[in-house]
Image 1 (tube, rainbow, N blue to C red):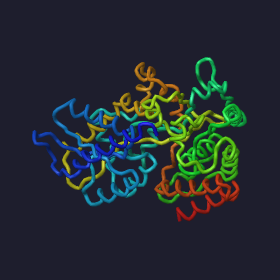
Image 2: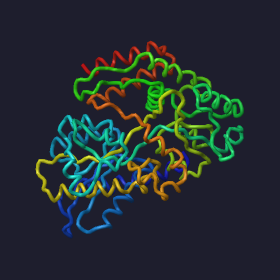
Image 3: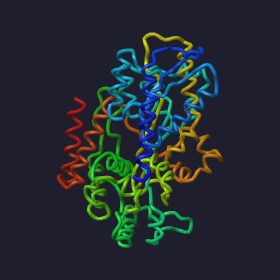
Image 4: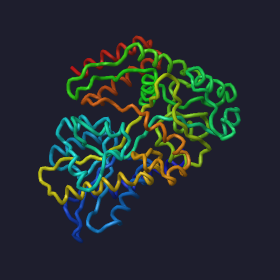
Length: 421
C-alpha cells in the first residue's frame, strides 16, 4: 500500500516504547499519580488516534497516568485471558463486543453498573443496540467506544469515468439485489482492466458480507439466547439464499484468489472495496479519490454487519476503590472522545456525538453513520468466536466453488453443532 512502510514504522516504534511500559509494575508514578496499564490491539492508523486520546487524558489531570500497551492482534485474547488468570492483567483493556460473553463467563471482567454510576456514566447515552451488546446476564461488563459496520468504498475517479456517479458525487446504485449486481457489472464493462470489487475469495470480509445479506433477507439469530448451552437457530434456507446471492459476484466482478484487496484498491486498480469503516482514515491519509457509503439495504429488513470496540475492566484480586474509580474515569474519558476516535473511521457509540455539528462536518463519516442503528451484533454466547471460524470456513468453500451453497451451509450447521456440544 502507499504509505504502508511509514505506518508500520510508526507501529514498530510505538510497540518498542509501549511494550516497555508493560514491564512497569508500579501502582503509582514517581510524582504520586495512580498508574494504569491499558492494553490495546490496534494496528495501522487506529493506534495513533488512540495514542492521542490517552495523551490527552494524561494531560487533562494530574491524578492518573495511563500507559498504553500495544499487544499483537493475533494472540491478543490468549494473552489477555492468561494474564488476567495469573493476576497480571491490565487495568483496562480493549475487547470486541463478540468476545465479551466468553470473557464474562470465565469470570475475567468486573461488572460496571455501580462503578459507572460513581463517575456519572449513563449507558442510556449509547445507541440501543450497543447497550444490549454490552450486557451479559443482566449486567454491563463493557463500555462501547464505537460501531464499525461493513460498508462500501468506491473510487470516485473510476466511478466518474464509468458514468456511475450522481450530481452529488455519490454512486448511482439501485437498492435491489439485481440493481446492486448491475452496478458492478456496468463498472466492469466500462473499466475492463479494473477489478470490480476488491474482496478476497474467502475470509472475514466474505463472512461480513454474507452476514449482512442473511439478516437483510430476514434471517433468524444464529443461536438461541443462552450463554453456555444455546441451540442453533440459523435459518438454513435463508442462509443458502444469501450464500447463493454472493456467489453470483465471484468470477465476474470479483476475481478469484485476490491476494491483497487493500493494495488493489489503494493503488487505483479496483473500482470498489467492501470492508469495515476502519479503511476511511487509511484512504484519507493516502489522498485516494473515494467515497464511503453504507452497504445498501437490498432486501426486506434493514440490517448490517458490524462490530464494536469496547473497554473492559479485567479483575484483579488485590485492588482499591480508588484505583477502580480511576479506571472508570479513564474509561469514561475515552468513551467521551468519540470525535477523536472517529478520525480512524469508526462511528462513535453515542448519538449525541454523531449528531453534533463537529461530527457531521467530518468528511465521509456522516455519509455512513446512519447504518450504526441497523447493525446486528453477534449472539450472547461463549461460542461466538469458534462459530465465526466455522461459518467463515464453510463460506470459503462455497465461494471457491468446492461446495454448493446447499452443501456449504449444511457443513456450516454440522460444524456449529460440533462446536457447541
